[in-house]
Length: 91
Image 1 (cartoon, rainbow, N blue to C red):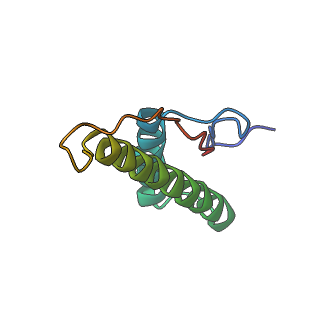
Image 2: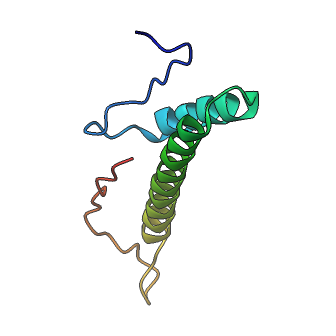
């Protein structure tokens, strides 16, 4: 038996890129705004959207910290150079 409402959530094990997370959020918004989904499916999509939004915000915050570090100078006006690590954020 197949559902008329395709729920195409990405696999939980593979973290999405920032751009893919935004694309998926757009899809979720469209599905929720359609008003045609059953309540339980709407709740599942909403939960997925909240997780994606939080993960995306964490990535934005990390990128902002990286930029701030890159623009940091010491008391003598020399750039402060540190190895930057990209945190692994799961969506």
